[in-house]
Length: 415
Ligand code: PLP
Image 1: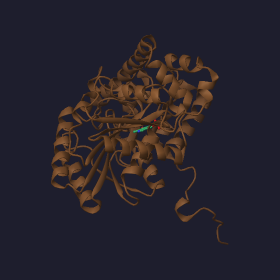
Image 2: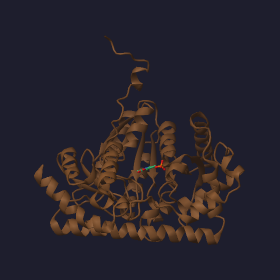
Image 3: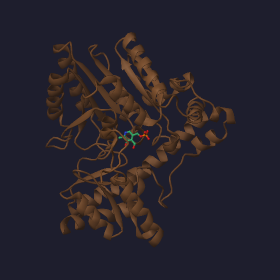
């Protein structure tokens, strides 16, 4: 008998296939069965303390819970509350605000910002350029919105940004569709932890400037996904490139996807923004109008209480300093964990791709699915990706980070 199908052909989806959620569920079951000490659960993409509890900033939650009910419950403006937009712009650029016409539109997390950039800056059916190691949701967001993705190898032979590969892909896509949107998830890329250096940014800027000048009909959109920026570099180090990404031809636009999920532990509160640094007021207005309209047509408006919380934190020095102290406390824990993993991996010869900062470290290997399954037999849960494994120091104690490389190396050898 023919299978019943009510959804349209393009909405037909296989259920329960998200590999990360599936393995995370198994890790949780094993932890219940054997206790947290016996299990290494590196499947979670959130900062966890050494006891496996989600880290939450006191400054954020005291502020949120201290808000009057109406400021939690109310709708926000379609583009986001004006004072929030001002403060989220500060949170994004800090002391590295570039010259140019800057506008922000609130979105439910960085995901919303990615969605708005894909839908407003590429045509239906266009191909979006990603690195070959990439956050899987980009492909889902593109597919859901009838766009395609293609990739270029993130690394060159020296383990740096593969500028040549990226340039080649940009030119090919421009030839085909006269418009290209490239996602650069930096600093502290998911899943590798790679950060594009200032030198590499300079070369990126030179190339887009030359290309956009030579092809005045073309349009180049740089979407910089900042989801992990507040766990990268010291002070404003990780933001230095922002000051440079301006003063380019008018057919280049820089967009930033800013998320409060990791940097302010607001994951489920769905808070973030899409920002533009535009070369003209017209292009900035066009951006704000398009993204505000997209808000209305998708989720109407964002989470008011989450916006008010960020506004309060950025309006009060004491609160702000408290939030920054919490960020920096957990950043140093994350750094110690990652350093323990990297040190041990280097000692025993476990190959990793270049890691700079952030929540994840990637291990290239053949048959990642089989290696991940083998590790599970040892109560070690590591996410299998297309090109290898993703280990998450954000979710695993320093002691377990030190133990994990040997377990991973053994599993790779056994498979
Ligand atoms: N970009 C990357 C690379 C991510 O890993 C994430 C979250 O995991 C996001 C963006 C956006 O997250 P959210 O929508 O929770 O802000």
